[in-house]
Length: 327
Ligand code: NDP
Image 1 (tube, protein in one colour):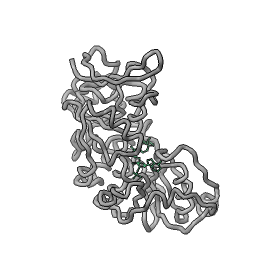
Image 2 (spheres, rainbow, N blue to C red):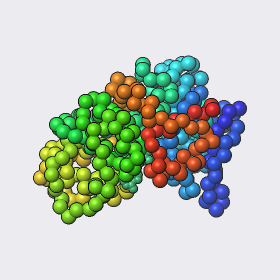
Image 3 (cartoon, rainbow, N blue to C red):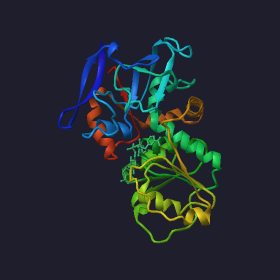
Image 4 (spheres, rainbow, N blue to C red):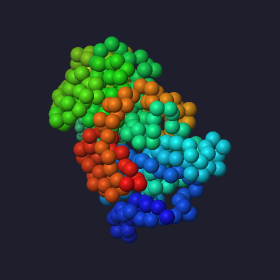
């Protein structure tokens, strides 16, 4: 028997989470059984832990959209007992039981082996948010990053923190947008060279184009901020749109696309095929400075999760929460 955070929904539609002991036979079907070591708290986990159940497709449910651990048993020849693996995406923690448990079972295709240079804790310090940050940077690179500062919005959050550290580690000048001035020292320690106040970009303007300022952008916020940023991009520069922490609407005009050739690149970490995920994890191991990663980590246990789920939805988490499921 092992510990699991199970979320249930009652007849009135109210959800509740409790730590319960279950057995291997209770786990869903899958080719690989993993002894989970770490999971994390992502924005989607906040939604799934919240009162409406967010993206949860079936109850009872084990949330946790990512995890890292050691293979315990495998029906797939690519994995054997003892291998270290990481899982992100594929609706795990939404439609399939996730990482808030000491054991998990998943399809072999959803896993990747940990690349050299990453252990399971570091892999979850990166997690889905960090993998997405890497995919966003790779998309900017594919389209060519101009000379000048690269903007990161929602910078003190999970995606933003990792994107800041990766871009700075690659030698780019990074302008970090935050609504929390108290995180300025933290963002500077990750490599940001300029701190931009959130309110400076939240103010709406009637001007569809402003001074050409940003050589690229990783945007975790969306909404009015993204609309404003589009009009400030350099000619031909790209924005990797990752999230909607500031809203799903996009009150923009087509002018930045027509007159500045701006590229708006959508980034999805969920349905990434094996080869793309492996390539991104290998880049993370190579290009993310590990001392900076350590500075982002907030440790947690299964017991802390309900409160942390509420915090992430309020935009109050700094960096990355790493959940030690065995603590
Ligand atoms: P976090 O909550 O850790 O970070 C979001 C950050 O956005 C906050 O820390 C805050 O940064 C900023 N923010 C929050 N609310 C607002 C607001 N109203 N206006 C402006 N800024 C705001 O979440 P993550 O970094 O984990 O995820 C960020 C987004 O990316 C989410 O929407 C998430 O769903 C999405 N995502 C998408 C993925 C994909 O595959 N496309 C994968 C992973 C995440 P600060 O305090 O610095 O201002």
